[in-house]
Each structure stands twice: as structure tokens, then as C-alpha cells.
Length: 245
Image (cartoon, rainbow, N blue to C red; front, side, top):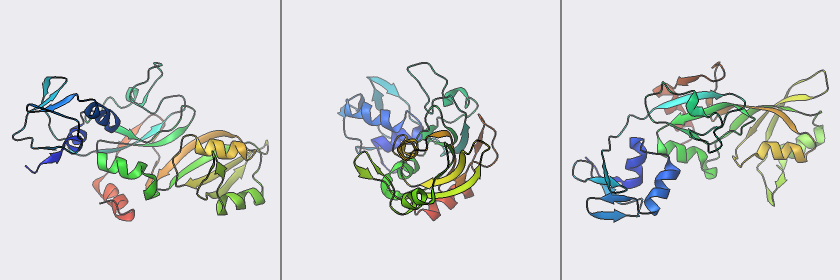
């Protein structure tokens, strides 16, 4: 077997989330044979090396890479564990055999598409801002966005927290009886609450928010609270379109 970097090996086995794995490695919880390792790039051969976590031997088996899309309902946390004991994604994915993790997050009051996978490389690729993976949302805002404000957001972005965001793509879907508006908005950034902040400070607070695409992966017609495994050709199509090696 070709040697793998310790972090990659642990990620591909579904041992824990990427964030926790990096934390555990940096804190010296892992030992390879007789060596305590704090370097995530330390090379490991699973056919020859013995791994320990907190001085207990662990058996690492590389999992088949799996990919699922999940329609997150309103009012759940988009993580697998919550210190406040609120409902989480984990409450809905018990029948998934692989240990998969959410790619990015949606806030408690948002709903829609979340990608779940044990592919650490793809996760890192999607969440890295330099790769500019577009994400599309359906949002309901208070009032109507003027042509002037729409033009500014689409050409100049928005000055937020001292930094100008990238331009948005905005399409009006419909107006409600109360003169509020449904918009389809595409953005290539993933900062926390970015859309809620942009529209709040533009004078049009978001009342509802639902993510419908990540790149060319779409929510399809999955009911709220349900998940669906993606086909290999769907993942290959994403990787090809966005040059994800």
C-alpha cells in the first residue's frame, strides 16, 4: 500500500471530522508505532504501522468514498453534535452506514441543500474560498429590492465587515401579496450569515432562506429531512466542471 499522510489516512477512514482530526494531531493524541506525531503530513503505511489514539490502539480501515445530499429542515443544527442539545443532522441520517460529515453549514433558521461526505479532499475544495464554488439560494426578503440596489449588488458586491464581497447574481422570482419578494441569489462566498447580513444592511431583512445548489449539485425534489446518495457520474461531473483533481 502506498503511504498516506496521517491526516488524510484518518479522514479517509471516517475516524472523525477534519477539524477534530487536526486538533487531535496538534495536541499529540496520536502515536504511530512508538512515535508521538504532531505533523498531519507524517506518512503512514497501514500494512506495517500501528496507530494509537490516546494510547489505545486503533484499527484504521479506509472507507469507500460516499456522497449524499440532505435537505436540511428549518430548526435543526447543521452539525452532527450540538452542546445545547438541539436537533442535528445526525438525527436524520442514522441509516447511512458510512461516517459522513456536512460540507459547510446552514444556520438554524435556514433550510435546504447540505452535502454529506467522507471525502476530505472534496470537502476542503468546496469550502476553500479560492475555488469560488457558486451556491444558489431561494430567499424571501422584506419589501422589494430596487433596480439601483440590485445593480449595485450585482456589479460591486457589498461592503461588509470592512471587506467588499464578490458580486451577487440576483433574479426576482415573484412578489407576495404583502409586497415582499422571493429572489434567487447566487454567491461564491461562504462567510457566516453573509446573505442575511447583506440584505439586512440593504434594508431588506431575509425572512426565509433555502439553499438549492452547490456548484452543479442540486437539491432535486428531496423532501425536507430526507437524504439521497449521489451517483458516481454526478460527483465526477462536479469535479470536472470545477477542476477538482
